[in-house]
Image 1 (cartoon, rainbow, N blue to C red):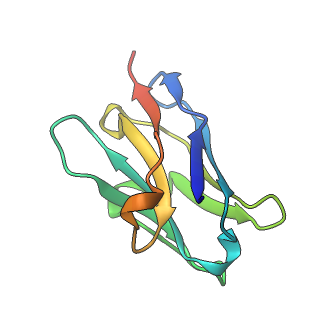
Image 2: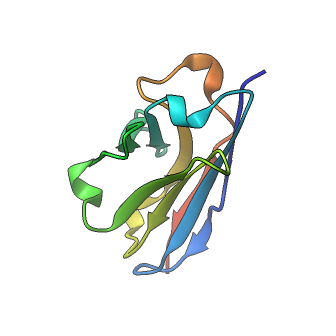
Length: 115
């Protein structure tokens, strides 16, 4: 019954911005630490940002200062604001709890950074 719907991806030029959204249903988002993950072709899925129930955040070093994770508990939604995007950010992005739960993976949203 839990569903996490990833959206907001697209094609952007290097230096551009995107805001990803993760809308949760069947769960109370504020009760869990949430994370944004990404998987690039030929690479393992990796955690890029996380936010605790108390609002504390943590980021992969390569995205610090460029990405911001946030949550809107009233909307049961987690966001990832991505600025100054680089080609190496190209990947499918997913939200999930942290630690992740296999049954929570959604379809992901494609982010492509290219000129």
